[in-house]
Each structure stands twice: as C-alpha cells, then as structure tokens.
Length: 291
Ligand code: AMP
Ligand code: ZN
Ligand code: FE
Ligand code: FE
Image (cartoon, rainbow, N blue to C red; front, side):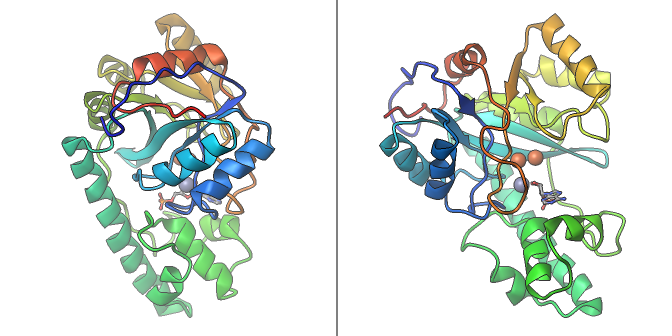
C-alpha cells in the first residue's frame, strides 16, 4: 500500500471515474483535469491514464484542495486477438511488482511502436520523431493520439479524429501493434495488486467480447463493466446489462475525458453512489483521498 492508510471515503456523487491527463493522451495536466471535473459539478473523480500512475499525486492534491474525493485509477491496455480491451483499474497498489512489470513493458512498447510508426509515416509525409516528442509531455505514456497531434501540427490532418480515420488506422500501412497482455492476465494482475478491474467502453461498435472470454474474466475477479460511456451501442449494451444484472456485477458510467483530444466532457456519464461504494469497499491496494 503506497499511502500507508486505508480508505474511509464515503461515496459522494456525482462521480466520474474515467479521465485522462497529459501523463498519457489527455491534453491537460492532472490538476487541470481535476479542475475541469470540479467545474462540471463532480464531487468524486478518478484519474485513469493509460498504463501509468504517474499523475496520481498531482491529481489527488488538486482534487482535495477543490473539495473533491480522488479515486486513484489507470486504464490498463490488454488485447484479445485483434481487439484492444481496456481494463479500468481502481485502488490497486501502484508499487505492486507484477503489475509494474506489465505496465513498464507496455509503456516501453508504446514508445518503440510510436517510433516505428513515425518512421513509416515519415516515408510519405513530412513528419519526424521530434515532431511527436514535441506533442508529448516528458515521461508520458505515448500513444497514437500524440502522433495525431504531430500530424495536425504539420497540417497533414485537421484533428485527431481524421488521423485515426486514416493514417493511424490499423488498416493503413503505417500501423504497428502494441504489446498488451491478454485480458484475463490483465484482470488477474489488477486483482492481485488489490485493485478493482472494470472493462472500459465494453459495448462499442466492434461488439461484445466472446461469452467464454467474459466468463473467464469474471472468474478471474473482474468486478464489472463501464455501461455508461458514449461509445457503447445496442444491441451489445443491452446484452451486457443483462449479464451485469444476472451476475450481480458493478456497472459504472464515466466520460473518458481527454481534454481537447476528444469531444467527451467531464460528467457526461456518471457512476451511482451505490456502485462507487462497492468499488471503494472492494479496493485494498491504495486509498481514495478525501478533502
Ligand atoms: P493507442 O493506445 O496508442 O493505440 O491509441 C488509442 C487511444 O487513442 C485511445 O485511448 C483513444 O482514447 C484514442 N482515440 C481512439 N480513436 C480516437 C479518435 N477518433 N479521436 C481521438 N482519440 C482517439
Ligand atoms: Zn486515451
Ligand atoms: Fe479506452
Ligand atoms: Fe480512456
């Protein structure tokens, strides 16, 4: 346990448990993300940068000085066959050795993969690795959004959306796959670190993960699903809602705010106090921080 104390936080909503800062592919520092959450009327917020916990301290200070409760989190990259699976992890021990081996390896892969993509893109477009570094906060968990920002800065595309629709798409010749553990390994590692794993945007346009994989993740300790997210669509969402009800799982709702990097705004989906209470009860690796 990093902070050396146990959570006594009472659930206070409205809460948004999925926000990104410039420690990964959000465009604002953690303190500014918490300020945006506060302006949106939220009373509890989590920081869930991709594969890193480096923004927690700044976010916790900012949130509590604004009178908000801070929930430490991360969005852990995983993959099933060709599909990326994002595992939101809450209240885990950030110093857990096994989880750190996984996240260190993913972040290294993010870096080398971005370099390779930059080389490939650079054959056809005026774009260098330095252009991408210029869009990336030092030490940040690098992703395709940073390459997108560099393409925007060079005038090759209008915005991140256009970059993802073309040059950065897996179907383009420039795409390089990221190392990521399989979803069951990811869920198990979060649980072993005392954390609470919840699958992010689980009912997107690519449809539900196969039943067998869902069952294996639940057996490995998966706590629930982010049912409230703008990318979820029917019929996958309804089907997953039925599974959540049947298995008594946790359902969250959150924005997936990325600053100016996406249209998502803090508080556009929220998590109920009941569900927040269940997450707070279940997490044992680190603590929510109260004002
Ligand atoms: P990566 O993990 O480097 O493969 O990049 C995936 C990240 O890009 C996700 O965290 C998304 O939030 C972001 N992303 C995906 N599609 C888009 C889009 N159309 N516009 C902006 N950001 C996107
Ligand atoms: Zn992201
Ligand atoms: Fe995600
Ligand atoms: Fe996200």
